[in-house]
Length: 143
Image (cartoon, rainbow, N blue to C red; front, side, top):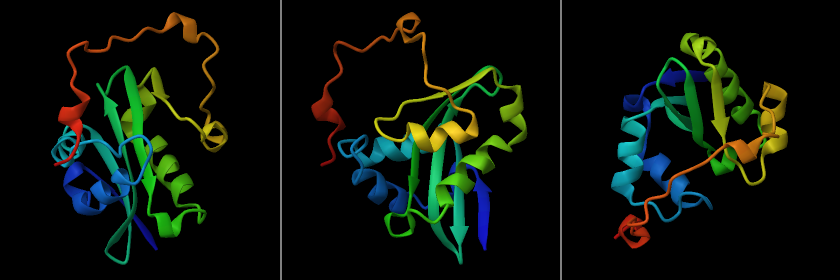
């Protein structure tokens, strides 16, 4: 039976770092940055028989906005519905119902998120971003 846990203290950080280092979006992050990002966000994890099988991270102000990121399932357990349970568990959290919007970015999983009510952004031209011109990607790399 899968057990839902919240809080960064319930993340198996070694396992999470290992899984994230195998992704296209986080493979060049420093281990210390991955851990800090978990500690500074809302985290939700799923455990089975004492072992983490999935987790996610939501950056939020708990009032208006959330940014869903680092949704990841144990590579050996993908395709078993664990990801669906993870997203459902997030959407059942009390504070989620107070948020105006949750956004996410994905290269290839739009079809996974749509049944949960996520919509493709049709007015993306209204959104802007600021990127640090002094950011050194080399500093992100793990030693």
